[in-house]
Image 1: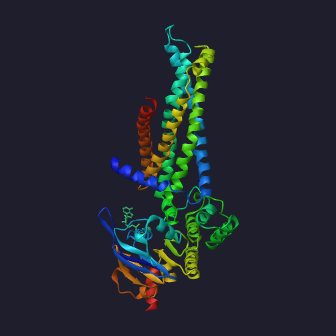
Image 2: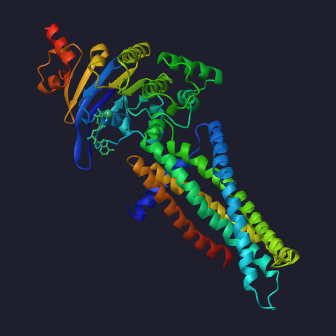
Image 3: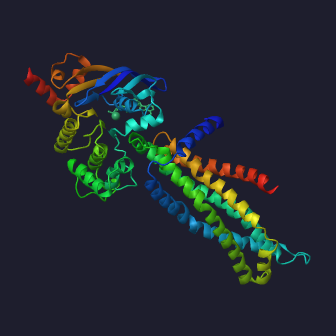
Length: 251
Length: 246
Ligand SMILES: Nc1ncnc2c1ncn2[C@@H]1O[C@H](COP(=O)(O)OP(=O)(O)OP(=O)(O)O)[C@@H](O)[C@H]1O
Ligand SMILES: [Mg+2]
């Protein structure tokens, strides 16, 4: 469980987030949706402390993350896996070394066990035979999947995915959504997914949070989203004609 | 940003950098890599520059001596003194500030703007220590050797010129090299070099680490890093010379 209390953030006088309160539930896939530039990535980074919020608190289960010192934060972070919007793969390391990296830094596994875990993670994101390539040598969608493999390598308690399926074809996209949803259940993780993809919302949106104008505008799930009477949310959701049709048929 | 806040932020970064590495094995692996890339990778340029510097000092000194009162061995003596006292430690440091400094600033700057540093932090890794400590340690270990090599190559350059041109007898040149030699001058050069090695690696790391923006900002950080480390080297050079020689 991750709890965000009254988090606000401004950049150069421009209010990006104002008084956000959210509880992400454990064992569930928590989705954040919102227009481009609405502050989804900033919110995620404030949650994990990569950006310091101007005010507010963040709790990882019973630990108040915002009040911890550097050392204690580092410890909490070994339980976090994060997929960045821009992948953030280490470009001096091969795919295999990238996924192995957190294991080398924190686990007590021997070389063989690490190799096994890496192969397992890469297989789960449907990547095989790229172990010895460098990030620059594979496609954007493949990089995304490597980044996901790296994020889950340590079996994190908390998983953050910033747009895990942007740049993926619809088929792979579904596979990735399913994978994230599965490992969330298997390991009873608290998973946060930032997305634009209404397909993901319908498939795995157990809890859906809509960010608009720097505020938490709406909260619900993939069922209630179709029948929402919130104007801004329905503008966002039903911009897609597929969604319009889906809503009509569900009524 | 003003000087004071730069210094404050730099000190905070260094305090984070000089922490015991989380995994010694990985630290050694990186250290070896940096020794190879920062040290061995600079040998070529250092050899070329030192050789020609020794050669040029020889020609200039020899051609300026027209009084019979000044002995010919002065040439060898001058080459030795200039190579050891100033050229090898300071000029080599300035050249490395350009070569190694821009390299470090752009490498770390790129990692910053592509969120690779954030990725390290999220894994619970002290990114400052992980990225910067091996570079500083490597330079402080390897640069003294580079500088001593530079001294020898410079003196060899002078020897070759005096042999090739016949401007002065090589025996006089050798005599000059040995004349009134004090080992302390080599210690002095090594002490300066260790300070400079820190500046060459720590200052560009600082500029890279706090890069904000995109690839343009990385370029700007790299330029600023080279300028700043060169100026700091010159100032520290002045202070150390005052402290050690006077
Ligand atoms: N480091 C920063 N400095 C200044 N402004 C920033 C910074 N990071 C983000 N912003 C601003 O915050 C706003 C929200 O950005 P954010 O990246 O969170 O959007 P987003 O919702 O993730 O959009 P997208 O869906 O396109 O990824 C943007 O207007 C952006 O300009
Ligand atoms: Mg974003």
